Amino acid sequence: MNRLQELQSLIDTNNISSEMLAVQVVIYRTLGIDKDAAELAMQELGARRERGDSFEFENYIEQEVNKVPKISKVDNKKLSGQFNLQAILKLIKTYEKPSK
Image (cartoon, rainbow, N blue to C red; front, side, top):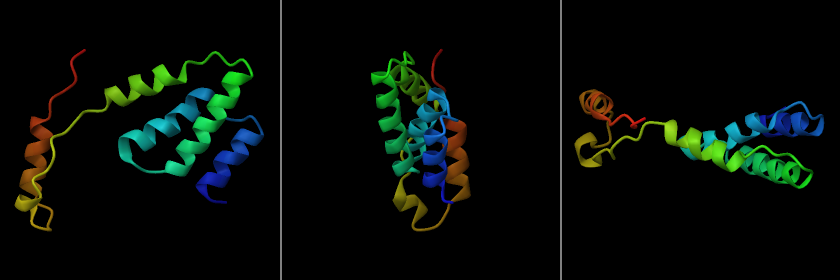
């Protein structure tokens, strides 16, 4: 069973919370992975809303996405097709932490 089938099974059996569905969207928006899972999660969140679920998934998603540190774009010329560990470490050390 692949990841998407597993998510569909959890939805079909009502064994996944709205919060965990929203996390699927956060994963896609922050890491750019599992687009299909995010789309399925959004469809289910919308259906649950229509059935009376009051979970404010839009606010939850935005809050969680905003918690992820933003990093500067990497200068690809400096990396020149290789992972330049010093440049990566410099980016990690100099990223701006979100203000609270």
